[in-house]
Amino acid sequence: MNTTILVIGIVKNGDRVLLRKKPDGSPPYKETWYLFGGELNADNQNPDEVLISTLKKQAGVDIKTTERLGWDTETKPDHDGNMTFYIYLDCLCEYISGELVPAEGIEKLEWAPVEQLSSYDLVPPSRKLFKKIGYL
Image (cartoon, rainbow, N blue to C red):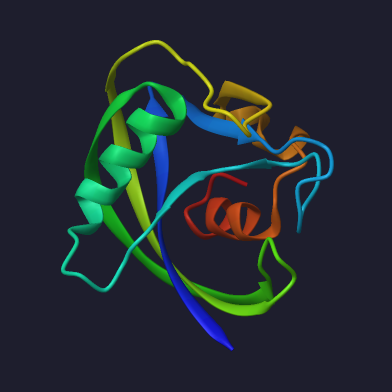
């Protein structure tokens, strides 16, 4: 089984958080909303730099990491259907600047009000993290 480490960021802008929507046909959770995350490789990458780079490339925004919230795990098929053990390093981030520009493969970007998160069809790991920090 493969192992993948992802640095996950809850990007806050006032009382809103940044979500992205998966397009139809995008496994394993189709047509759902989720948080941003970047893969941490074993070559001494800094988790904060991974998140900063990921958000700039995938959403066009500048952020800074403000708090490391902990970690979580999940086993599920990857995009190719191979069972993978995921380790999520969860962080709270602050929006600094930039206009939302979705990268290829992202259907939509949205600043979601925290009080309305329960109305979004969130992927299970994002829902679990929002519950953990009291947003759901």
